[in-house]
Length: 131
Length: 131
Length: 131
Length: 131
Image (tube, rainbow over all chains, first blue to last red; front, side, top):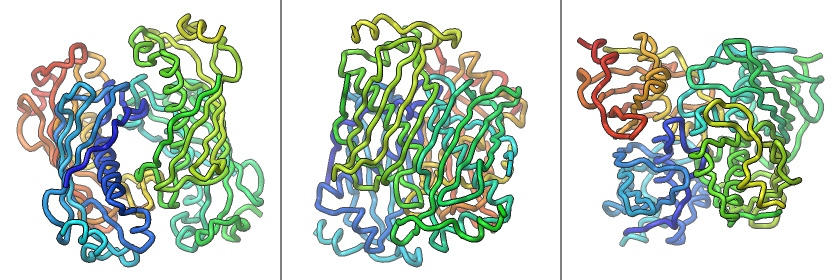
């Protein structure tokens, strides 16, 4: 289970006065990649939420290797580390237009009921994708 | 009806590579000021939302006079332009630690039902504050 | 002088608890559109900045007509209101995938020297595009 | 070396449609805490940057235990894990107004020359604080 986004342009507002992308944006890039990957599998996260299933991030790791600059274009590669259990574990690699390794990361996501914010099992719609 | 926030420190992540605060943040500063002002009047916007009342911004104007820099501390002054009607009209002035005029703005807010996202009247809890 | 962006997907992190896109993001969408438009004309804003020319926003107006939701895809149309002078005046229209009018706005941009943050004339590289 | 921020109010724009604070904001909260801590020691990061020293984040870990909601007020505790070397290693704990543990994290920061973006040693102004 491996997926790469289309090229994404760095937005001006994502830079800070260090003159490159602020590190908090990479968590947003990871999120875009995993939602786009779900979407490519025919799973709409928007409709999952409407049915009361939330997928919050419960932990994250990031290693920043090289900066992204305004004007750069990057790809996020996302990979499901293992079949879904009580959590989903993703790995990410961000690469710029020169094939430089920019950032690597991992996130663990849980499943929550929107109603009472308590943990629930991985929904069948996701499970069946990975069997 | 006039209210000023406590001094607020510019956050590093609010700057962009132009080396000062990105202009989109001023709409967030205005929002902080009007919610803090409501709170000072004993109105919790969080509980208004729980009761199904949303207050989206329907229009905004901003004039940027001087930049805010990382390390600066500013105050937002907010003023209700007229008694609440179908909408709330606010004016804002942002001033830095040297008393420089940084930004002026206005926003118009409407009242929406959270359930069906349709316009509703100004809730009594707000109306009674201004009579 | 009229330009439309490619379709842009709403990002999850751009929503707030009102369940649609936070209004401050529209200033970022406008910015993306005008930089993408410059880029389409062969002008790299990144290189303009390297040569010491900044283009800060000096005023902005926004009218929010309908919300954008996570999962929506929108286009930003940007139009230069008049030939460049001491400032650049842009108009914007945002339309979603159902052709709903989402937001209209205007921004005025100035030209600043990066060195001393003082106003400068419209650079020739821009002027010559509009004659 | 241990420092706690003043209470910080959750901003409305920091929430997403999951109805609590988007996880990317915690990296900004960590940043605010370590810059505020430096400031409490008499070190202005703004002036360090003017002298050409950047302190980018090179890696980060976060564990999210409980959500922060709009209306919540939290404190960030920051701790330098060991004396400064080629990098600075920080630990963070975020606690809400009910003393709930919200988030724990770590970041490693490097020192870069602003001019050529290459690694430099820990500046003396920081070193001398920890001897």
